[in-house]
Length: 379
Image (cartoon, rainbow, N blue to C red):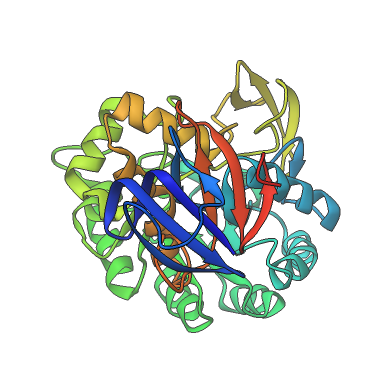
């Protein structure tokens, strides 16, 4: 049993200035305000306790990638983000051949079963060539029912999200197919107009993959997918809050318009997250990382980020002017809810004891996952 007390706590009821939390085994069993009813094991004085981050869109980190046939490499990528506070992480793949994707999915499925990974996200290959970003445009294609079914079957329920461009032929049928397999459908890398995006949302798409990035731009006479995704309350919008992908003013605009409850902060990190500048691969494409910004060697398109969610938290608080409890909602509560994970994402009795101790400058000092210390002085 561990009892935290004496500092700020972000619970399911909001930010508490002097709160306490009791953990027993893998679960949070109680929480309250003021003095706890049991001896304190962890004094939070000058610190904050928040739920662990949930990253629904990540390609790698620490010099390692999830786009691999080496399970040990994928494990190391997850470990890098765990040390930065991400206690639940989705492994995002990029566009590839059917054969390559099949092998990558097979490599990652045991890590999903072992709870190293939250699940697998297929970001591609059913995306627009006009907004391919860091995807190999030669391999992009319209969704084919047989291929969609085959890849979902290989995943065996571990594929939890699929990004698709709804203007492609066969996309609405594919959305229904993906939903029947129990995965979430996201709209991204798309040139869809407003009407096409609305059709996809009505068909069941509920996520905007890194809103504004790799999408037809918003125009006052042509709102496109951005307009449709922003206005629909059923849609969770991803944002990459690294100061590169989205201007702080746009971050504030989306937050103000969509509301705290509809924003999920993601990393979209590639292998260079938590690693030095240099040359990396994103799938089969070469990427140069200079001053922490990743761009394709060929063409210069932004190629994911070098972000960790603790950095995003500090950026959104300082540059976005968003309160800590609202940022926690966007980093933990919202992505957990969107993925149907009702066992985590908030500090409340009965939830998983995925907890972060933050220092005075919002730096991650200690990480607890399922009631066990995995990083920091608590170990």
